[in-house]
Image (cartoon, rainbow, N blue to C red):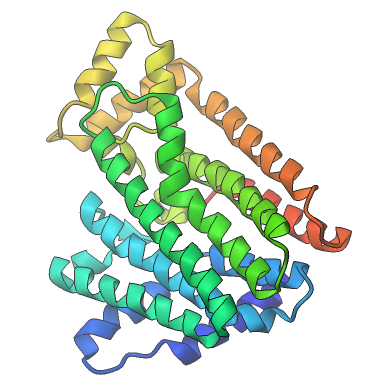
Length: 322
């Protein structure tokens, strides 16, 4: 089922997204959308629509809106992080420059909203309201992420709030889109949203783990990028909490400034993470939020076989190594 949904979505994407005039605006859009990726968010929209009893093809435009918006955030996020790689390829701003990256990203956001115009007025209003709320929350999360880079007193709760806004609200939105298009009740739509919210937290925690302990080629991004950018991830916060005074001081010092030799910095931080068994503790947190998401899924009023499909999708997502 997943492979069928992905194939149909990619066909829809190819049909709707073209390199139009001016080429310099649309070429970067086609580029980042063509870099692969698992298409997790649009697939969740289609799976949700199917689970609530409608033909998933009716949700293709909403799924494309989600994918366009997600990739718009990636372009801008890469610019802000000065990231060299995205999905194993050169980032848009490194390939075409920052100005084109910003403008093409802006165009993607407009295109995302245009795709919602395919739905009737009542459904469009619900989708548009949720999408705007989510888009602003993602901006909130991004700003918190930036703020945390220069703060020395970030708490675990603040970090979870930040990744909820920056990452998981879009996962929840993707699932709720499917429910709204299927005319599910507000109660059930909210349940599927909360399932996505917790799954999204688990997903981001795993992304943080892979950023430090993944393989650059298979992960598709620069390993250690969060350390280089002084991001106060849960790995860092956990290590800081468990470290002795000497290691606490080392961590704080390394995260207080940018370094000339990033390789040495990454290796030194990873050594402290390993010393205090931070990787295994983060895996426990990933498991906690995954379990919570599945408990919520159990309460959603959809057929058991549809629950199982969403459960397996989430389970595969959490077992990924790239």
